[in-house]
Image (cartoon, rainbow, N blue to C red; front, side, top):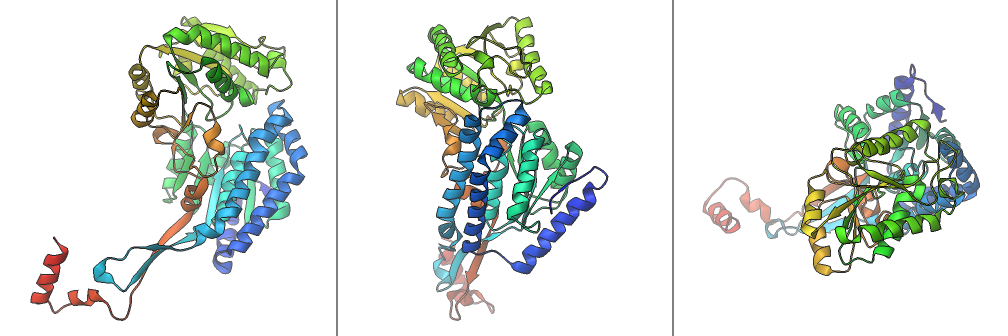
Amino acid sequence: MTAHVSVKEDDFLLTGFLSRQRAAFLKDGPPSAAQRRADLLKLKTALQKRRTAIEAAVSKDFGYRSAYETRIMEVTPVIQTINYLRRNLTKWMRPERRRVAMHFVPGRARVVYQPLGVVGIISPWNYPLSLALTPLATAIAAGNRAILKPSELTPATSELLKSMLREIFPEEQVAVVTGGPEIGAAFSRLPFDHLVFTGSTNVGRSVMKEAAENLVPVTLELGGKSPALIGPDADIDAAAVSVAYGKLANAGQTCIAPDYVLVHEKDVAAFVASYDATALKFYPQGAADRNYTSIVNAKHESRIQKLIDDAKEKGAKVIEVANGGTADPRKLAPVIVLNVTDEMAIMQQEIFGPALPVMTYRTIDEAIGYINRKPRPLALYYFGQNSDYRQKVLTRTTSGNVTINDTLMHYVQDDLPFGGVGMSGMGAYHGIEGFKSLSHAKGVFEQNKWNLARILHPPFNKTTDMVIRYFSR
């Protein structure tokens, strides 16, 4: 069974979940490729059957979110990931032959990928379905059992996940626990075989610290201020369309949303006008539009508004776009923020909302220098056709991933790894990199009865000296 865990009983019940899963893993051994594929198909089928219920639950948690947005940003990507995992699983599970040095011939070497055991997954509120089920599907593909801790800020979706997973998997294979920060902290202290966390950098630090007590390896998908650099030769209208989509989807509550824009000083007015026109086209009623998502709760709405107000007080110009706001306090009007400086909180914190700071530059080198003075972001976007500029940006900046001439799209490329670097995270859980992250790469060397290595056994003699000299050249 899955359970809601209270603060008083958290350690006992969480430890119980882990103990039962580990015992079952040791008893049953690694699942076959056929079993893993069957389990992934069960997960896919359950998603397809519950699509309408998922859309309703997510919308309830957010106050409002378009069913189309949930379908496009959450349900479909998870299904595509499952399809990809099922197609490639048998190939990934095959042992990899490795080279054997001449003096060890005719021995044979290979790498075998085996399940780690039990994987813990802590998922966030902003995409409460996909950011829970994508790592879960990867863990299943790698042959692991898993315990999922979804966000307490999206309770309707968390309850739906709990009931859905309980119906298709026994608790010894997949379990779900719910609760607040205290449960999250207790969860992080469990001696998992691997822990996957998606969320803020500050919470990620705490998770990693707790996991370190048991030497649990972690995959951290965090965030940060992902820049969109619009080159001096870019198609401004096309760039504005892509930035508006990436920024305003889910009302900006996306870890890889463009956090700020760097645009050449000659193109500022054109970009602002095009961004406004695009936002109006996407959302004709502004924040009141039926396709525009609410901010998840009043606390987050207040936090974003304080960032905007602080920028105003320090000299920024704030421009409402797409016909402005609404009477609904949970729906925050999309805005552009001009004349920003690093002293403003909006340029120090990840915004995670529909406010877009616009900065100017004179040269590509200046723009690159600004990006490099900041912590390494989870994503970077570059717009422009000049190959020299593009290559300079790619080689002289370091980020989790890059999309060129668009936004967000690297995330849905199943064959690309996804993850951060530095302050934006570590590890990856997409593609074959995800499969390998949640597997143990066990090196195996198989010695032949007759082998050259024996000439280095004692007693040592002149032949030993000769062989050592040969291999030490």
